[in-house]
Image: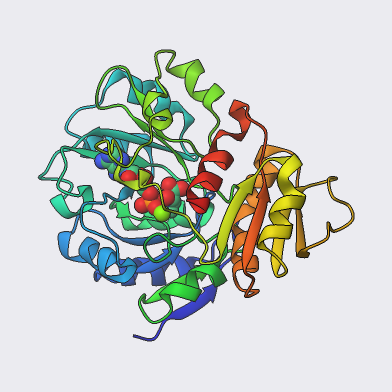
Length: 333
Ligand code: TXA
Ligand code: MG
């Protein structure tokens, strides 16, 4: 399959580009779309045949459910089997980097989209391009991150093209994603609501609207336990190059051990001079949103440099850094 790549205005998408994407999606094709978190690999979310093509293109196992993207909260509500109180409270944060898991109505969302499970995940993305497409289409779009299974998520169209060229009909290039880290996933299908995946939307905003929210399941990540969310497989979001996360005081030892061809990922203004043994030094912003926004692009870049190892200096332990710590933990396992 020949993959078309088209540049689109991220703020005011050209109507003919929106129409092109809608035509392809309506006939069951795959289209890579920009969102405010990462690029998504989209297909009709109410069509089993179209949605099953996502699993084929990603090489993703069928038990791993997809996120269904809709234009407005009331569309999600109309597609769900029921709409729990927690979902009602949290949906006020839409459009945004938040995914809500609710009971599934099988006549509206096919089995393949939900990994055959009793629930389905919904999100209203805050990106003008994808919102315009959802509105014009008038149907839901299933879209996981636009990368092959277990690889790094794409924060640019070029990242998506690296692994999906020839497997999708169209890639819409709207430039780099604002958050650069996936949405926060909350299970609202049982009480109390529980955090399944920390992400771009911080915990504070969730707790304000859902005070009973529990974070138990993300602190008990253990491959021997049944997985509350299949995407929580320990190895995920990983570069091919060996990646280790080390405490700041262990950076020099790690570089000595893993070098001579190793990269160091640190935060500004630390390590202004490259420590001995670091072939490359990437300095990321010292605030969690800024660090998160550049993390995957940095790892994509370092992964292409053919190094022996990527040494990442550990980030702070507070809640603001929860999503970044989670992704670093998985990239390193
Ligand atoms: O930011 C994002 O969420 C991006 C953009 C494209 O929207 N999408 C994304 O999709 O990261 P994906 O498929 O890579 O991750 C979906 C996450 C996985 O952790 C998956 O297990 C979880 O959502 N999930 C989906 N449906 C679920 C369900 N019914 N129950 C529990 N977890 C679910
Ligand atoms: Mg993914």
